[in-house]
Image (cartoon, rainbow, N blue to C red):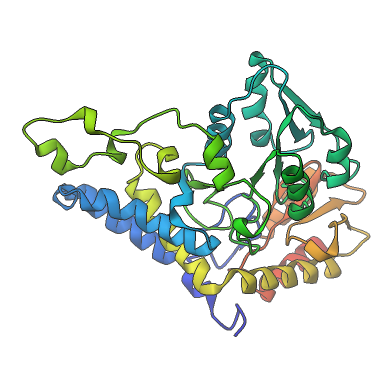
Length: 384
């Protein structure tokens, strides 16, 4: 059964008069996730529901379990976060990088992948911002610049400013061969393209939860391989990760008995019960898993290919999508002989929601879109 036959649109409350083609910015919240938020609001309105320790454990562990299933990784390898930047910063701050050590990033990458590392320059760490010959760095380009002092390579999996996809295996293997940590921001791919990070030579995969996972803003996760877990030191100890309401009820609180949580839990963001956000993301991730990411990816690719083939080349130039063997569903369209502002205004008036990036229109369909949405978008793009 295809995605459209599964009637995925009925699982969202998208407006009839508009077409949301901007998953790379925000994924809409599914109805079941909104219902979960409603239940969490009721808990807060009637806080006796939160008197025991159980909700404070069950909410984060339910989310961790859903994400682990989606990624086919053990749950204790996942740290719960509030963004992809959280994971990038915990790695940058947790590694023992010192004077002369090098970090390689792409100069044209999204700022969140560069800024955590440039803050280490005050320690003497050399952050090398390489300019790709194309849209994304290749393993060959990195190999030419890698030195004996290179400690980390940090890149985006799906480049948000072009839609191009990096070669995880080639770059990851280069890093493994040189004992370099490979850190990947998967925010533009997780939930839309199949990935199990443990099946690739990746050391860290960090992602937001509010794009292709269709969770609330202010959610995310960070997966750490055993190599990364051994190297990234924890720099905090959150009391609720080691204690419960039952411990607080004891006559004497033994702080000396508090131990650091095992695995990636020691890197969790504070406030892991985060009822409104994490209960909703758990439901969104469950919906993504039920639909099946391989099926979602095939559906999304068919939508973007349909749109690319239907656009009038006299009005928009479809930008190169990179290697066809690993296309993302993200399209970039450059207006021909008119301004980006005029093009964006025309689409908005037609009820087509897209993003403006690097002087172009970025189109990012997802599994809640159907062929009818694409036909509407093509008509608007072609001025019909």
